[in-house]
Length: 283
Image (cartoon, rainbow, N blue to C red):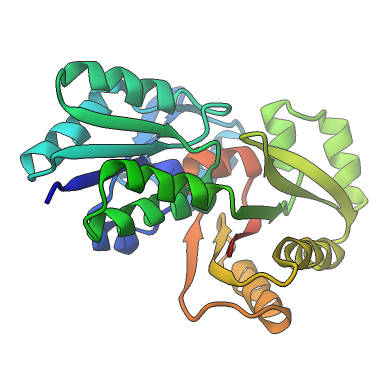
């Protein structure tokens, strides 16, 4: 029986224990401040990220993993007994990660490595990775492993509520005056993944109404289907994620196994501290 190893990147937001359970290798995104660089999951998390941002009053840049980082992950997988590798990357619309993963394949001529552009992010990508890992664990051929990931990606729904416009202003995506007015008016944008990007869906007054609207969007997405998996993601807002979970699972039937996880720095740098989100996988 051929053994297929699963590789992804840290923008998948997969909790370490889940990645370890399925022997999934997460290649980390790098966070760059002017005078130092940090590796996601090694020496920086969302808490430290925003401590540094608030201290420096400036956002860092992010760097996709190098081809060498992916090559190292591939080499370790082959040394561990893998016959083939399926690598599922964060959307190529928001990161050069996919290109790095593809470039690394050139270092392994004759070996079977398939790189998939998830066109997703966070646990939307993470659920695709888990589906692939489960298929691989059951002995599926790499083609079926890939198919399971792609089919899963088509059934994923992502909604997130921003806590503040402060960090969007720091990134230059909106003006500081507009951000100040938005925060004064208590505007809470709702984001979703659309065409492979994290996109603004709606602007809602007050956090309470934004959460209520996010729940309505979830109900519409489910529309009588079964929720197979659900994840609640956040940046420095465990309490808010728990609140969202309580509310969602009071109006929709949630599975017994629920994932709560950080967005992780490669993504949360774009949303800001306090963001909460829900990722649904429907039947």
